[in-house]
Length: 542
Image (cartoon, rainbow, N blue to C red; front, top):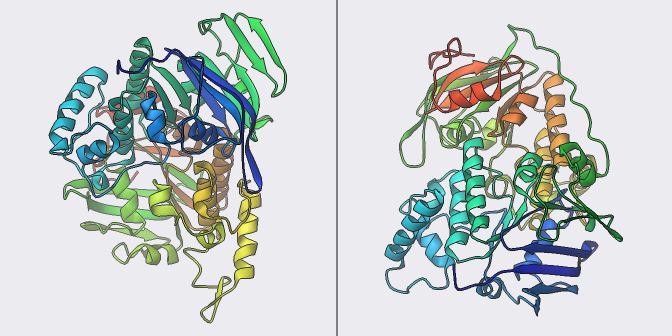
């Protein structure tokens, strides 16, 4: 890490447009060594575009980049890396059929041609001791959870000798404990003089770690502020921009979560209205004695049983890798269980018959990995909207697709969910991650399913979009449906769920009422601690 010297970087007057949209409009941004600068904005606000310009993935139409006071132009990511800039992307840049060590070797310019894996293993050991990020070098990427894959991306950047690190939603798939550990890693890196640009939608995180926060809205600079009770930067000033003019005032701005949210979305967010408690005996969905294996042939879900009442959201909390992924994939028809049954409104779900059979039974699925399981990147938004239902009315009659019906449904979803897209026939891969998630959620909820299997539904979306997605899930509940919500964000579970089941080591170890429980209690259960009055046997149905 000593071969690069980083003191400061400035981007001035950056402008970038694509057909039909201006992604960045006269944006200026700066960062110094040893500083964490937060970058916030709604999905499609231009954050990723700005960072992709800095990393050499795309070229700006106008503007200047100065590294250590000298003008630079990064022609490619390799060029940026040679100048000590590393990037952790929002979407994983990994080859699923390769091992962890092989993926890391492919990312490093100085990996030896012969037997690179042995050298990578040594470097991983050094990185593990230095930063406390542990990965299994022999594991295949396709076997890993989303959280484990994100750790690999972070390790790749650390081993690339970066002195300026661009992190695009690095904690979206991390558990609370993993996030706390990662924040410790960030502080260790800044203490060593590394500059960090932190793109996130989690306002609490950015308020806790950033010295300054730059907010983008609709491609323009909405403001640069400083969190309350933060040390001043090296100039001792706090800059507050309105997108055109700049005011500089000494001291601290009292910027809290609510103020940041308003700056991001340009409006007040709606207040949460709790739903009505469902009838105690009106069971809509029931699972009994479900056992599921993981990709390595180990038992991931162990004799699990639970019920969800009509008009209820059942949340599932747990540290990543405790069976949540395998549980929801088995219920969605993506992974055949070893044993067990599921019933929806007194009908047995054909868990061994595949995803389409489950979908036809009235079950919607918002998958954990939207790019891997939720969409086809090269297809248009319209094609993705009818991807699961294109074989039936109103999208198909006598085997012929009705493109007018598909266009109508797509337009409705794009408008209702405020998807930022140039056209309904634009390729899905052209959308930001959050807008892709909006399309998936809109598609899955459009036909008012009886049961919604939602795995991390607000992962990687901004606070405004998350508010909308949660509102739609509540609407499903209030209309008499059932929602099975898997999330690693305790705040989301406490906000949405009527009850929270805690998974640990493949079992449901307890159920809590979020109205009478605390984050600490659920966190202890996630870690395997016994809470009196909360434990249940594996076969009980909460």
